[in-house]
Length: 168
Image 1 (cartoon, rainbow, N blue to C red):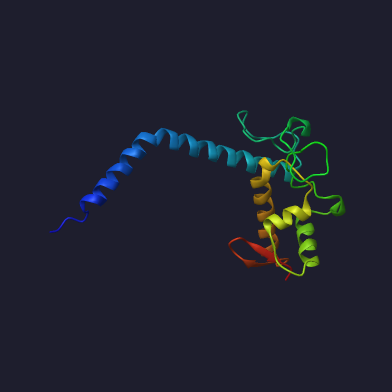
Image 2 (image 1 turned 45 degrees about the vertical axis):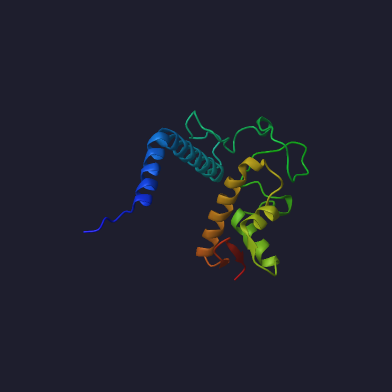
């Protein structure tokens, strides 16, 4: 019976195995940190939706919950008219959406547009500038809210990668 692996493939597999064994602790730590950061972001999002002033995130949390004072963030601003950068808060929409829930604001923005919008387009239209370190949190928040609106038939997904939406 002929061997399944030739010599070059065997050598590549051995190199990969050795690299993974040598870097195993680093890989596990990196994944663990990513998972912890993801959980912290989700807890912050849930807290912001619930309006909780007491975050339930562990003390070692790596991301600032929405209820933390805005003055604690010191990253430079990217696209804001405010003098100080603030963390992303899903419930703090632009002034023209005052009193409107995020899902209703998304539906309103899409209804006003003639062409489909991406998640980033929606973020730009819904929120004033915020700390760009929170952009993944903002994208996730708008994507989740848009998905709920899609399930309710309020918006329609036009494209998957990158996701684009329009009014039905």
